[in-house]
Image (tube, rainbow, N blue to C red; front, side, top):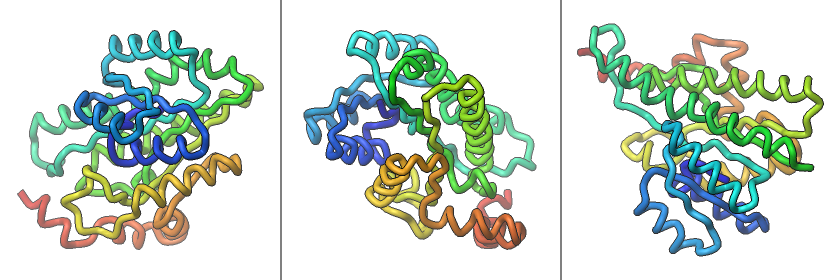
Amino acid sequence: MITGGASGIGLEAAKQFLANGASVIITGRNQAKLDEARKLYPAITAIKSDISDAGDAQNLFNQIQQLGGIDILYNNAGVLTDPINLGVANNQHFEDAAYEMNVNYLGVIRLNNLFMDMLKSREESAIINTTSILSYVPALLEATYSASKVALQFYTQALRKHLQILNSNLKVFELLPPVVATEMTSARNDKKITTEDLVRALISGLKKDQFTIRVGDTKALYIVNRLFPKMAFGLVNPKKSYRLLQS
């Protein structure tokens, strides 16, 4: 099951998982996009659901149970708010942070908790959490998004170790994309990786049991940040981006 599966990375993952012989369920908040995804790939099961809503999440779990359950939970859904200077008092800071954390972090924990026993009962199963290159270096223009991905990264690492302590066969993977060419990043002129290349790298990592899957520029930034953190910060935050925060 892929959350946020009606477009972008999620839809491409659905496409490539189908090509690898998997049965695929996608979820999302936009019924029109889910319908379009079904038209493109009729084999997909599409369920409207908002992971930030507890009632929606429970209804989703109930429907999945009736369908026979899942072996893989891919937590792909994510949201991003507009840049805003945190140094200028504004109630929007809290509202943006709450929105992003509810989807990008707390929504993941909610779904994992609902599906944990189901996944642990399977002979082979996995959770995939999408964090970000910004888990290593924060983007000034995406401050709350960066914070939500750091939280998810630490949670992912802890969850993996907790399951190992329980001698569980449930595997936990972390996918760390660089900037990806999706609707979310359409206004940006940065170097971008395609969704096809990203998902191809994800599937390759899954087959190798590579629990931390760094893709594209994330690999290089990970090393640079360990050796030269100031340089890494500058690479993620070029001076030209500062102008958007001068208000």
